[in-house]
Length: 165
Image 1 (cartoon, one colour):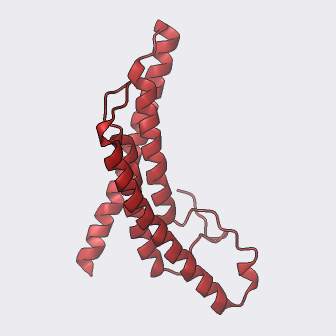
Image 2 (cartoon, rainbow, N blue to C red; image 1 turned 180 degrees about the vertical axis):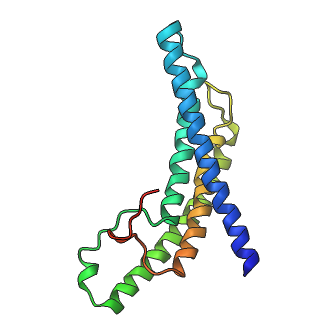
Image 3 (cartoon, rainbow, N blue to C red; image 1 turned 180 degrees about the horizontal axis):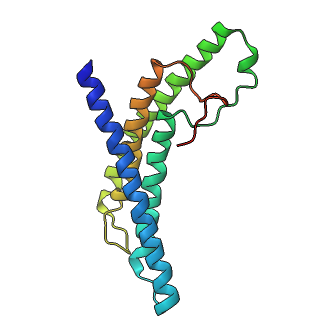
């Protein structure tokens, strides 16, 4: 069990560090693009495409991180009025749906990534699959965090539990 926790902590760290690095790269590329356009009246052909690629990756990794930290929005207006036992059933059902969503992302994301492997993005020359690979990677993390949520109480942060940083 201890080995699993260590392995999961490593995966968590990879997700967080890679998201931050990609976000930083995206900011640098956009700043470069704006400065080169304003100062030199020239926009590199690759900058917009690369920033879009980085944005897609950061967004999809952010979806997974949102499940890990219970940051996604919940509409508990009806469920909160039900008895506690039924609330637990809905909570468990929502967690199973998250896992199913992750598995669907992995399956269809992988198929689409393979399908797009033969085409290239014109600005960077990278294969289009580099863009779409974010879907199965994010699906893996969503599935992992969904399974982890099965062993935790609740699916979302309570308003009084929300902490900054």
